[in-house]
Image (cartoon, rainbow, N blue to C red; front, side, top):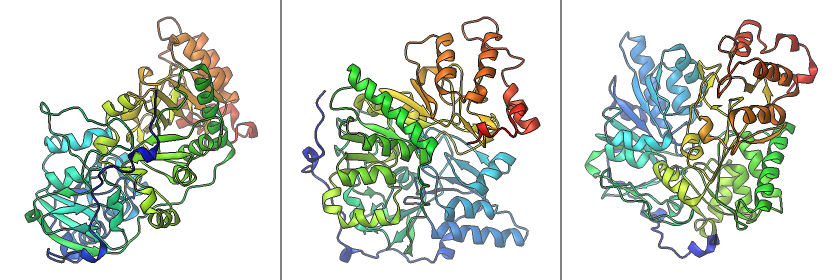
Length: 524
């Protein structure tokens, strides 16, 4: 398989955003409080943001302020909140703390909102992120009353230049009856040099995407909407609310080492092409560590990414040249990395592409490009089913995000997690997943700090033995072996009276295996 170098696409026609001096002001200026008054109780409000990157900031805070005032006056005020994915503190945290959300989709990572979701105070709809735009356009989620979208520029004829994420904002701008633009002076108009925005036609007239390389561009650098829908501009000057990444710990580094070991084996066996395949990586510290591990291994070729986020570790690899280029929908970078990006935008803009999430997460493109998908699991059972979302099957953590978009369609689908968490109280390897997001058919490889289990071509009995031996924490291996031996017959063997015994123990005693309490050997 022949892979093009990033520079092969440097000369492609890229529509460039207007220069800073042409930032025009053709629409009514609103304060955040005035913008919030546009929104009515019960409205569906679609906000920009995919992670805190490019998320709306000032208007959500003003909506929360207005909601508190309405509640103090004994009047109802809540909105239905829709975004591309998770957002920043000024959006989900602030609105949740003001009790201003009644319904939320498709993904969140907010502590205050998570509590409301799990208490039933907020109706939460967990969705594959690639599905969101089409479901919005077809009206499956209801009418979008107002879109609140961050931009670096908006022109008289309705061209909206987005900032550090594209996400579902193009669809929200198209579908909403009213549009409020947060015009953020902090965000450079040069970010649009990386934008490649295309909205596919709806079925049955949707053609296949003519996208053959992660850095190929097939769209425009802006979203074009009817300017009459823009009810006002809120001027802001704020950086994205991105948290820092924790340093890699021993467990994350061990997981990364086993991922690298597996990839090296695949290269040596010829099951991966010598010039490699594009990588997708999820969000978080383990994902960052895995990318660091891949980048630091000289036996793995220079590579490309086709992913939904670009985190800090891949960005450093981009600067060093190990990462030739990346296609993503959001830049979740540290502040100093954003400065570095903009200082080197003339060179880096040809190696970074920002796409709408229905393109960045598109199953057909993932399959066509042969993406190697690497995502994080909460829980894995003996047969390779994966739970990405619900603690003990009931309490929502964040949501499925884009992991399903990639895992089901990847050339290789890898899931990573520690073998045990919370000081050994919880084994992530259990007899039966308490909730299933990715079934056995979508999971090729499981990796923990203990090792990796390649499940391809294995029957259930073989999968169970390999997962226990290579992935389970030593403190839980005997229990898992005993469970399997005594599980009874069947293609997939389970004892239905005991398959959730570990989860029941956790709720009753605070440990999946109470006899391990106080045993330092299980500490994580």
